[in-house]
Length: 110
Image (cartoon, rainbow, N blue to C red):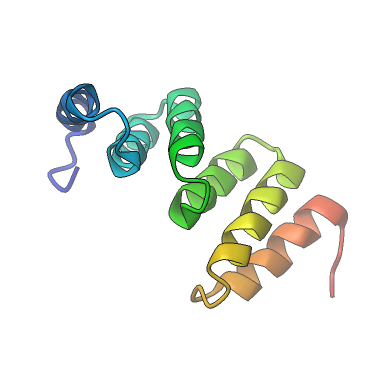
């Protein structure tokens, strides 16, 4: 991933998932690789698997919120962001992101 070669990273994460399918971070990293490769649907599926394995994986929730927002699902992104902040309320910039997402989803400008 650091080498900006998402296709190669996908192969590596596929292998990691095959070896240890119950390891949430392998799914999370593969989701990041899919997102960088432009496959948002595959990224979202992997993020859902992360959350099935580890419901409190706040980074997966943040990534899912970003994908939902990019897809035009402002309300879904708001729910994912709220869930992430419930787990990690001291996330840097979290309050500002929540305010902006709430504005997008609900029209709240305060």
